[in-house]
Image 1: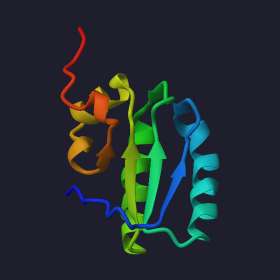
Image 2: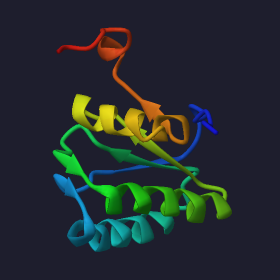
Image 3: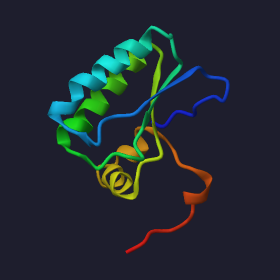
Length: 112
């Protein structure tokens, strides 16, 4: 289920390392723990510089979404690059997460 992020919601943005895999999850979890101190309504993961995400990273996103939802916090994704966007679409995770794209990329079509 995709949730809309309210414009007045308190949002904390985090940037993951360039590769989201087993080795990079621990620092990202620490960043989320630090963000929780700000009592956000939304934690936004900025993915525009993400080079790759593997199955561990995808499973971690789902687990973190569930954990944060239990606290009343939305986990959202911001500006995934075309490769990451394709991975989210192929795994149907684009239906599970709120994904924000810049205006200029919406409806822009795909490049082969």
